[in-house]
Length: 160
Figure 1: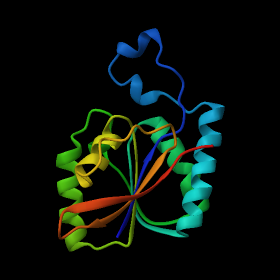
Figure 2: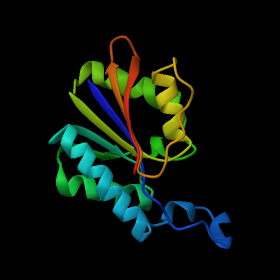
Figure 3: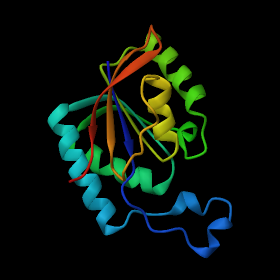
Figure 4: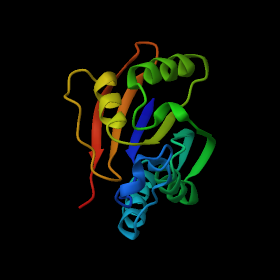
């Protein structure tokens, strides 16, 4: 099964008021972030024309990034998940996702999330590598075996 783990595009910088609860979740993509998300979407579309399951962070910048994907690629099932925010636990999420995929198989899964969650999720699934630093709109492509509860990093999309 193919698992694509995508970081959102470039977002506006945190402001002085970002200490407020929920303020980070409201940060939007910049014009550059929208362009990055569109370029990454085109790469992803060249890999697959359909995504069986997409899990997206509820944060605005992740939702905006995902909208570029959804506008170009057919998505069978889309879910917003509060389990994939910047501070979420990648091991807990990965265990639940892999268990779910044993019961509800999918050929392609897309996760749109944030640093540092995305780098630790890749590392948890493929322990042979160090946690990779994701550029904005970067995508890790993994081959995952849900029954074995592990994966192998196969490719990494990075903006030129």
